[in-house]
Image (tube, rainbow, N blue to C red; front, side, top):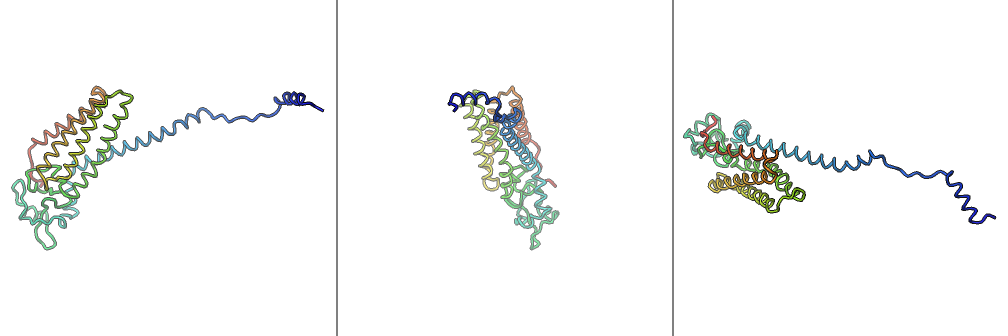
Length: 271
């Protein structure tokens, strides 16, 4: 009989000849690809969000610059003025002193009863483009002071506001741990954005038709808050960097544009 020591010696001699089970070794390239998959998905989501914000911001700017055209398109071409504008033409005063009755006749603005009508305050899809009704000049505030106009302004400006929060105060807060930005600076940046959002909301709530004085105050305050906010962001990211320089130049262009708009010769009609 073979004792235990003899059997152990035999197994030791046979071990090199027996097939060994190999463990699967993942290729380095496959490991690298798996490691990058979450980063690629995150990068795609970030780029998609940036694209959405860029598109909606461009759409918002296009909306602002095309307000007179959109007023003409919806009120006269699509005919909403005949259904939504109920103010008798003889009761409407144009800022330039032009007779609104003549304008209504020229544009064929008659209701179902055949009476000449016009778009008074809060009438129409957007305020009347044909003449500045009840005021001396046109403005963004003038055109959006209808229910659809205010709704469109709020809806289209919501996305740029999201971008201000996400890529402005929010992104700076995320970078604070690595960049060493002081908490007080970040609090100031966030506070100015809160102020902008608050006064911008009051601007939308108090239209020129309902509360013209409070509307003007709200416009002034949200513009001041926006300028201070962007200058604070530029200071935080360093005005000598490309981002800081771009923000500073954009603020300067915006301030100059507002100043020129305040002194530019006023036109009471697009006719």
